[in-house]
Image (cartoon, one colour):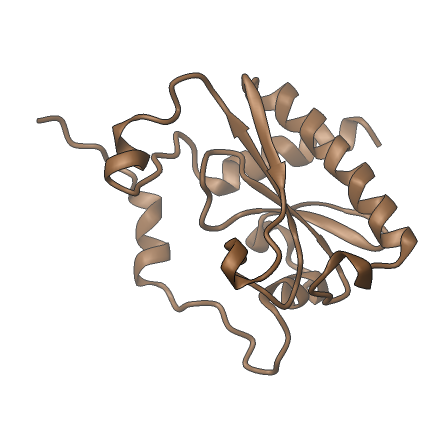
Length: 165
């Protein structure tokens, strides 16, 4: 049997779980933070931003979040909704350029029953997909194997997004 090594995952396993403790979501805390590199924020716009998912389904899994904490689509302003859609397109273009996936899953989960992990702050998921990426690891082991550290992926996507400003 061959062993797979992903040493960067230990920081998620042993590290403290992110909680603001003040009723604000982790997305609100990231939105207000000035440390984009530590938080894996890849770009910011006027009303929303894009951040790598710290617990991704696949390499390059990005979340697009409004700065304002809202739980449902009708709670977004027209400006927020439009900007998030435009940011989704920009991020998808950057992922396509940097990672060359065969396709994408793009969507959002609203409500706990729909799979939302952070119910109080809606966020779009952009998950790049490759032929063969659903193998025995995610199917039977409930484990994703990421070929690159999050900080490295974030840096590449930041650079690609900066080129297209």
